[in-house]
Image 1: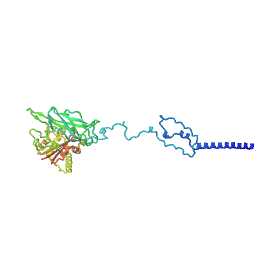
Image 2: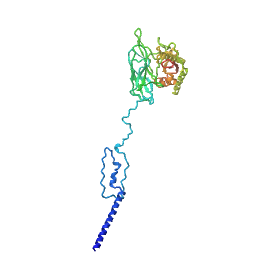
Image 3: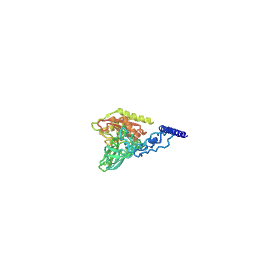
Image 4: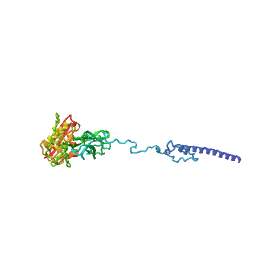
Length: 414
């Protein structure tokens, strides 16, 4: 009985030892087959990452006393993301520190500067003043280029008679196609006579530009300063002021104070400098005539008839301008377009004149002259006036002159 009891105790002990060995094997298999809590803490999720300067060491959690079931789904690492504080902010706008754009007109490749003359707002050509009388000349100008004229654009003195004007003068800003009034304050000279001041425009870089097809022609102010004869009577010198009719540039009807017959002592012709012989170019004359009449017919108007007396008057003035190195409707002897017409034996009821100067090598061709007139309201209106029926044209070229080529066109009606 005792022997049997000891045998039973011995069997129980052996069985317990065998059972303990099997349990340890299952725990090892579970640790290798499934991730434990310690495994997860050893590889922190990327979503929990922070900047190295603010990171706090992570303390591993104490492993669970009870191992996870091998059937549980292990946590999957999240898709890596860039830490928020290291990600630059996207923006579609330029940085605030970016330099300001270059002013329009400072780069020849960026835009072009050209002006268009649209009329004399004040002081028509030939206005008479007393000596040292102050006045303000205002032109109506259109921005014909692609540059925007800023406050840094200037009206600058170009040549001839400055009349106490500034070397440069501010002008209003203007977008392409915009029309503005440009003014300058002047003083009539202290001596009597006819005076002409030439002006141009200047961009912020100092580059100058003007009007016309090539963008180089100046605008001008032309006045006569009163002098006194021996009896103390005021005598206007230069162009006699003539009322300018609406839509008519430099035109005079026979009913105006300036009659079709010149007054006694008034110049009737324009002298040429001794030894000066400009070249006549009748082909240029014909091109101007054709361009003017083609434009009139296209506008539903009658073509103008070429009159040799008007052409003779135009030729005399072109020669005067070339040989005496000036640009004006008033001749070097004080003659006007209507006295020059009368001097050729033409009796008129309406008369006007268009003038253009420019070297053919730099745009002073018939096309350049016609384009300039068409872009100038006063000259444009003269070309399309219904008051005129006849025309005279003359072009001369003088290489030694200031401008090279000189065009004059006389418009009239008997």
